[in-house]
Length: 355
Image 1 (cartoon, one colour):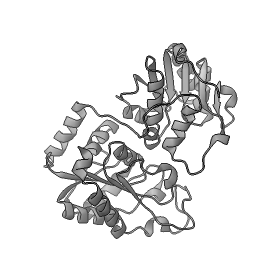
Image 2: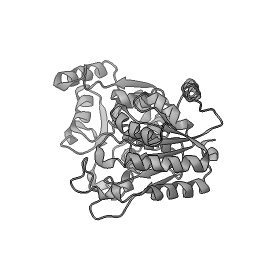
Image 3: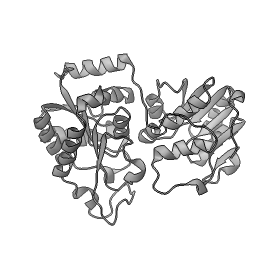
């Protein structure tokens, strides 16, 4: 194991991962970098959506946007990005993704110390390597990133995902909800029916609506539906099933808006998704519905979360689209989800969890 002397490191580049949920799960590892190198300037290189997640964040000094579809597109764009990074004279690159591309750019930028996992034929691009022989079956992704850095002697006290919103963002979220009649004293039930990886991860709009109606009646809750620009159709179906007794914000929020609005929720019902991990990071009690994905590695990393799933032979298949009858999701009923939510709520009153 090769370690890094903190006294030799003044500027650190962390190459962030590419999906919002995965990025949330890297935050304890980023906290370890911050703790191990307290005097260093830490920059995070991330795509535009993940960049928003960390703008701001207590453990990151600066965010550098990797514009894969714009100025950094293709080979020429990667060379341009490397040249931009070279000018900033980083001492250390912490490469969290496992792709060849994510290691190539720091190598092209001439960053002298480059640590990451040996995979995808990129070992020669790294100066410090974490081998697949160190893998632990069934390990959660949060633990993977912590263990990755611990292999290089980088460790810290953070063990759970951590995000921040600003007072201004929280105030804007409160104002938006108030404009639709949802006041500070109202119980807010968040519904997140989307999932960006593929349709196989999505439970059904009519069942989300059934759950929302029943829990709203039980808790005297106001229902808010979340979703990205590609999930407006699903959200509209839920809104229709609920006959307008909800606030549909799908496609109307930025990542920062979404974070502040989720933080305001008292309870959250969701598919396996980025917003699920955001809610977990803020300690919002939640029920997560899993089908084709592996809950052992990507379940919400929180003691205020319950996973609802069915044990069937073909799951987890990790496919984007179901090639058969989608039984991993069809077998999950509204009764299952309501029962899980009620059970968790009895253990952890939502207002206590959010305070």
